[in-house]
Image (cartoon, rainbow, N blue to C red):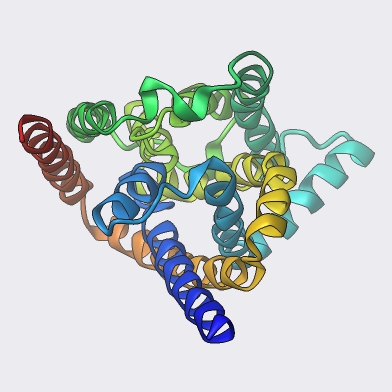
Length: 287
């Protein structure tokens, strides 16, 4: 009987991480906040909060997908930076893209390190509460709507500069707050900065590679400790794998979608998501 119980627990854990990986893959690159959904979906299914450590490692599936999808772009960026270092060709477009990714990563790197050092209880802070996530989702819906209306969509990725990367990177800092959405805030910032939708999304994906990788790496130690205690290595692999597959599909879909469509569908979704969370929180609190 203990063996059957253990097998049942393993199957339940595999199913749980499969769902978490799919949620991660669906929401990481859409401007709707993967952190918020990985907090809310388990709650609605009656599961415990997976926590920052497990969430960060499942995100590695998304990073594997974006690296695979943009492998040719990344090769060209590395080649451009190499030529710039050897032949002083820093104005070449691939070198400029590499510089923009680096300058755009610095703000969130410094912010993340500061939180790790000086705010050890961030995971249990007010920022991860349901009403706060709901309000942030609604606020970000309005901010994206403003960006959609005001952005002139004249800038293209081939014209990018280090300064452009820094501007979007400063916006990316706020993605540390659950409900903001890393892809959402970078896309919104880029649109406000005058970028075309598809190019804004493409750079959002590229600048996310170091950001998500660093977040996952920072939590690896805690995650491996948790795995040793719970024996959930196989379920975690399933979660990472499902996140990889779904993320790749979402990246491909979003780039094609934004070639011909606006971001209003995400504005509407974020409003509905935020209002629904607030109403549910209010009902539970009042009962």
